[in-house]
Image 1: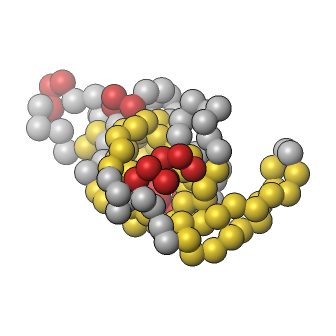
Image 2 (image 1 turned 90 degrees about the vertical axis):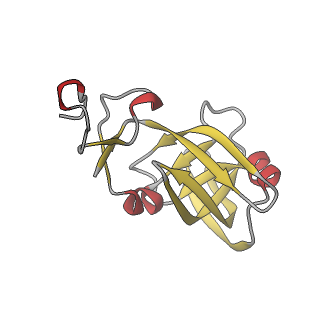
Length: 131
């Protein structure tokens, strides 16, 4: 089991290419979400459904697509809701649907992606930051 913070390095993998980025970890989100431009650029799909959701702005509908994402050295196939996230700091939001498959603990005191995926099986026990 590894440890990640509130953001993590990720690679979105689609039929048209790959994109490395920093994703936001959100334990309050049931489904992961991706910016529409990145989904198009990498060729995520196919569209599997359209889902309604509620936000502070009211009820809306979003396309749901299949896609692959690589986190912590593991490639996970999941469904992503397509959203306009261009005004947000993170273009991808990692929800519980992906977090369940990662086998990681989330430490909210870790604020950046540089500590992500730390293994409790540290080779250098003296300098291990996981313990």
